[in-house]
Length: 460
Ligand SMILES: C=C(O[C@@H]1C=C(C(=O)O)C=C[C@H]1O)C(=O)O
Ligand SMILES: [Mg+2]
Image (cartoon, rainbow, N blue to C red; front, side):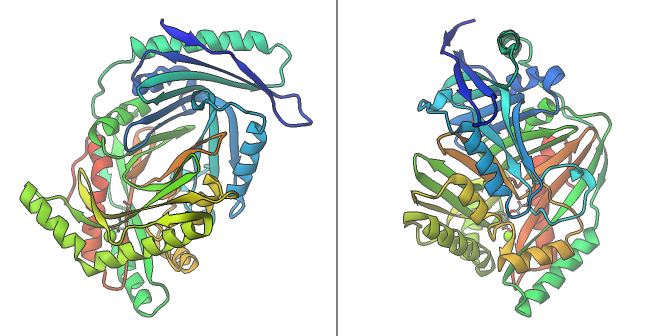
């Protein structure tokens, strides 16, 4: 194996504990991130994660948990995660991005939702530092061992982790490079379909009565398969079929939450912050010409421009409170992905001294692209009319490092896989002039990527 060795870093964690954070990063010849993920199947199943940004310039795979930050707090959860992460990394002065531990995870959509179902036992904040962390950046691949312990005999354990790492890399380069079959679906259910249609009518009438201006209402599909689906199996299809999106997978015990989202919540890179307003949708056309025509229709459709406008307003306001030199283009552009086109407005600014990526996540979530306007009224309406728990659907998922850089996507176009069952989620922004049937059809288009990866057909 060719690799370049870096020195291991030892950092004492906390003031009154003797915990030490050991890290070692090596550069390896480029390998398949998915094969590395799959190499953890026997030892680390249930404790893995996968992430790629839209541009595919940054890939992160985590196997095992060297450290976990989780809590069930409501509004305080963002601050609690930030505090614990800062405490853990306060003594890391490593400036080289490649030699940094990364915290990956997500915050659930709504800690006040009490429906359990597939999200039973899932923490409201769930973040981990991987034991074996693969980062592929600028065409270079790095594998880091993170090990945090107060054990006296840590050298022996660390030596064992080095052996394990070498085996994982070897397996990823040789044994796990394979193709996966699509699973066989045995049943397709649309739970609460009628309730969903009724709720759209109810919500539009609430909006007409001025109880809110916009509310995003979602629903789910419940699918049953012939056999248990593995995480690498489903991720391999998503990764190959949705190249233009953020790609993510997060395991928690038996559950894999995965998806392919076009929507950035926030990215921070060297003090610069970026977000994106994505709201307003139309399908893709069968020909280039028809597609362009649909795009033009979307760009001038008042109902969709309305859905979009609320998002731009709120994200711009939040940026103005946390950043200087905020830049927002005048009108939306089109964001075209495989199954759908959206209205899209990027927002960026220079992060204030005291602002951080997690503070931005806290203030932005949920944007009116996933929650509504006004935020609290919309959340109450969602709790009342959506007979499900979104879990991580429509919630912030992503990573950050010890320097404050990182990126969070909005986890839409996503699903929860629990052994031989899958729950797919999709919703849409309801405004005054929304119509139940066309909102229903919009969700069918939004289900498509996850359904396709699972080998399913749309029952239109
Ligand atoms: C809620 C979803 O998507 C959001 C709603 C959109 C809309 O209603 O037009 C478009 C993009 C997203 O902001 C989803 O995909 O489930
Ligand atoms: Mg819509």
